Amino acid sequence: MPVAYVALGANLGEPVRALKGALRAMSEAGIELLACSSFYRTEPIDSNGPDYVNAVAKVSTNLTADDLLRRLLAIEKEFGRIRPAGVHNAPRTLDLDLLLYEENVLQTPFLTLPHPRMHERAFVLVPLAEISPETVIPGKGRVKDLLPGVTDQRIEKMA
Image 1 (spheres, rainbow, N blue to C red):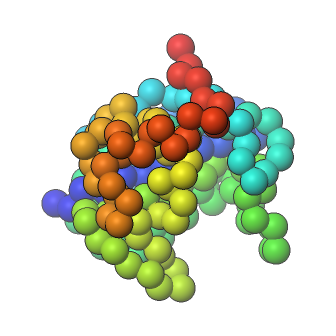
Image 2 (image 1 turned 180 degrees about the horizontal axis):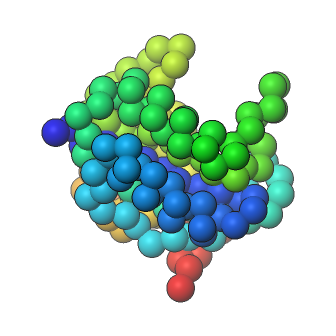
């Protein structure tokens, strides 16, 4: 089965509960959880509001990349995610981003792989490096080699 990586994040409501619930919901939706990073507290980037709680999950699924993203968006909606028109990076109850799907490189109106800017974000790279440091982001390099580029972003592992 194809392997993919999903970023989880939330900064409204009860973020830790939302991330744990999202992991359960993914399993119930036929997305097999292979590994999950620790949870991390991070500052908002290009956004406002309270700190985020973030993690990255390694999953396996028979779903196509498009269908996996559709399933992730449906889970977000179940958790009360609202996407205000014209507002980018608004605070959210749950955010599930498809980061990587195998080694696919893709750009459509619906899906871009690898996820844009993932290589510039500590809230993605640090948890991803925890579970899969040798993973290669196509066109960018190995996850562990990209970590020095995000040391200026505040991120702390939660207990």
